[in-house]
Amino acid sequence: MGRWLALRVAESGARVLIHGRSADRAEQVRREIHEATGEDRAEILLADFADLREVDRFADEVAARTARLDVLVNNAGIGATSPGGRREIDELGVERRFAVNYLSGYRLTRRLLPLLTASAPSRIVNVSSAGQRALDFADPMMELGYDGMRAYTQSKLAQIMFTFDLAEELRDSGVAVNALHPATFMDTTMVREGGISPWSTVEEGGNATLRLIDAADVGTGRYFNGTAQAHADPQAYDPEARRRLRELSEKLLIQAGVA
Image 1 (cartoon, rainbow, N blue to C red):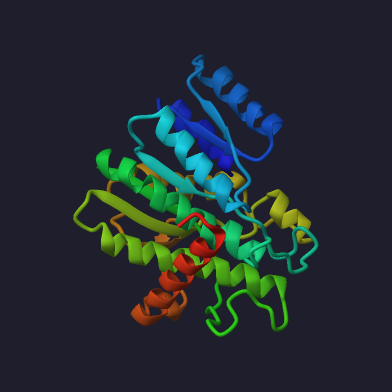
Image 2: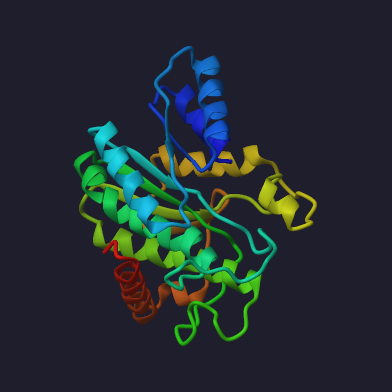
């Protein structure tokens, strides 16, 4: 879906900064944009969001390459079963799905907020999921019994909780912050790795995401299922739970040496 979005946004006239882990795959996206638009303005920035140090380096590169940032789409993620569905942690003990699906986007967004606020009106779109499960703050890194689906759904709810918090923080800044479940079981690698037959197309999810990028009526601090405003897991509306998530996030960043 990221590739689809990058191409559509570039066709609308925007300059696109392409994030990826694979230089070859990112270059393929850059070539597709060049062929579709006749322009060579898209740029590639490589980073593995499982490593928070790379997230910080990525943020520095964005700030060095552009004086304004109109839209940030946090779409990086790994599914419940990929790779292998086993519990993986970094050297600092951060569970991998929590790191990639939530904490990397949290850190990147925080690092890029000065650029986004200076470019207002601007937008932040967090690509989440209808699959959500309340965080267990007694065992957030799931040391006491691991399940890949629980890890995935907790990380996706954390994205939405962060969305609501940040939207409230930035309400008078001109920066809109929203989250969405783009479409159910799109035809993506993540879905196929889970052994699931796709239910919807990448274009369907891409169009729902594109709406949050450029539509005039989306507001801020909202969660959408496709193009319809929806209700997230009840924990997302609990101010105390969101406070605990903020504290956990900052503690993990301090442990990683990047706070």
